[in-house]
Image (cartoon, rainbow, N blue to C red; front, side, top):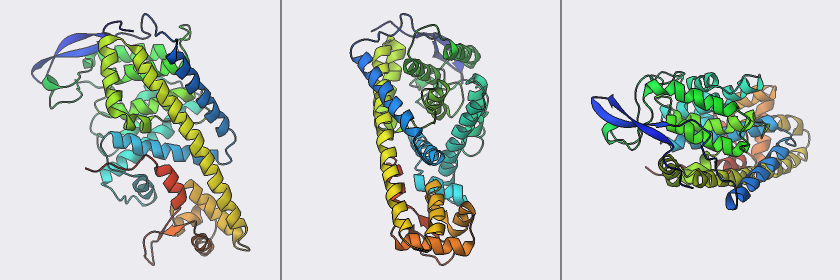
Length: 389
């Protein structure tokens, strides 16, 4: 449905240029999106797959490990959308030794996404409301170090920004003037908490994502915060009990369509086209997460059985194996600390895991060796392969 533009253009002067900045109208749209036919069907499929994912999460024996794994993958994919070349192995190496295999700024940026998600999740679990204050806190963690740390982390912008182009005058899109940001974000916060408009939760989240990206309230990090908010809104609404669904892989794979639809909905008010894309992303991503979780459960069960059949060293080996499920790249020292056993015990256990073909030593060194749980990493790496420069 074409309702017309979803906001207004306002002339503003920035960098000595007069530009048209887009100021979105408050949500919800009027008239509301028409949820019939194919759109109703994809909404029901998305909700059903989310229900399966939430049900599976309740059965996971190592729920925190799975949550960490999905958060790592999201961090890598989200940072790749912003142009980094950081891989999952780079992230794990950086968090283990602060020595990544990619440029240090790429690794820091990716690690910051993990920290920002963990902060948001912890605050919600502690009863803190999903609010503009929490959004600013998440942004503060996200840009606490590395690239963007000089762009007012934790504060809504106090100057004009733009998307695409070398300056506001040739930009692809100019968000609202900074004088409108607090009002726009206040309206968005109100929308997130009203409950009398009969909008399905997934539709509300889809609308909120467009609004946040349109407002672009920060000088840097808007895309990363906007993608994290999808997962946090699912938690906040009680749709998921654990943050196991992230859309960055889907958005990476359909990047051009994603950006085209953001422009399209602003100019035409065709929320239905955006909703069909977003809900299909939720459906596909939730289905993929269920399948990945089942594959990992089977992998872990098979490898655990192999270790249990290995005799006297099985006890220590199982403890080190549990540490590798938490962190699939470890040194002997880190494995001993995580497994709470001696260095010699961890070394012996790791040798057994290598002999069983479950773990590979990756450095070829005599000291400072690193051991990689390759089959686990291979599953997590799917879709995160970096694109050539």
